[in-house]
Length: 313
Image 1: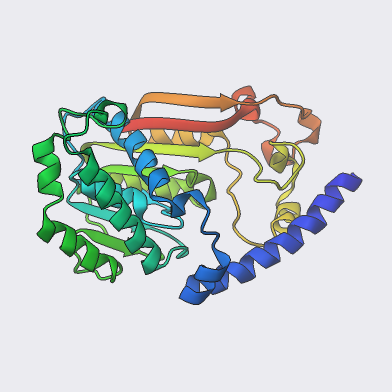
Image 2: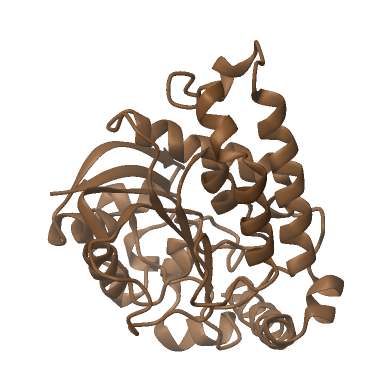
C-alpha cells in the first residue's frame, strides 16, 4: 500500500511537469528546441527510414504497389516516416498530432538526409535488405527523386500546416472536423501511439471512414503501464480517481488492453492479416485489479504489446 501511495505522489508531480512542458512545446519553437531531446529516435533519419520500411514491407505482402496516400498518427519528433513514404513514391502524406513536438528545422534536416539515402540506393547492390526491389526500381526512384518534386516537397515542409499543400499536410490538433476526405487513404500507420488515444472507438471509426476499399492499418501498440507503477501491468490496479492523481491529471495512456483493440477491429470491419503479440508474466492477483478491470481476460493480463496489419473489408 505504501508503494502505491508513493507512486501516486511521484506520478502526480511528474504529470504536472509533463503538462507544463507540453504547453510550452506545443506553443514555442524555442521550447521544442530546448526540451526535445535531439537523440530521441524519431529525430534521426535512419530510425524514420527503418520504421517506414517495416510498414511498407508489410503493406507489400498484400499489395503490389506503393501506397498512394498515407496517414501517420502521432509523428512525434519529426515527419520523417511520412517523408520516407513520399520518397518511396506516395503522392500525399498526412501527419496527425495532438501536440506539435517537431520543429521545421528538424524536418528539413531529416528530409535532406533521407533524400541522400534514397539517392545512394539507386544502383546499389545492397538493396535487398530494406527495399522491395521490383517496386522501388532505379527508374521508379529516379522519378521520386526528380529535382522539381524534391524542391516542392521541401518548400511545403517550411509550411506543413498549409491546407493547400500537395504533398505534406500536418494537422494539429486533429479532431472530427473534415480535414481528410472519406475513402481517400491507402495506409494508416503509427508506432506506439494508439495507447495514448483517449477515444479509441472514435479513432477506429475514423480510420474505417478514411480508408479506401482494401485500405490497410499498420500499428504497433505499447500496452504497458508507462512507468506509472512498478509492475508492467500495474496501471490496471488504479481506480479512476487514483489514475487521475498518478498521471497528474493529464491524458497519459488510455489503459485499454489488447482485447479492446481486437474488438474494435472487428466492430469496424477490419480483418487482421497478421499480428505479433508481445507477452510478459502477470504477477497481479485479480483481487488487486481496480473494479473496472476485474474481468480482464488472461490474454489482456499477459499482453504487453501488439503489432497488427489489418485490411478494411
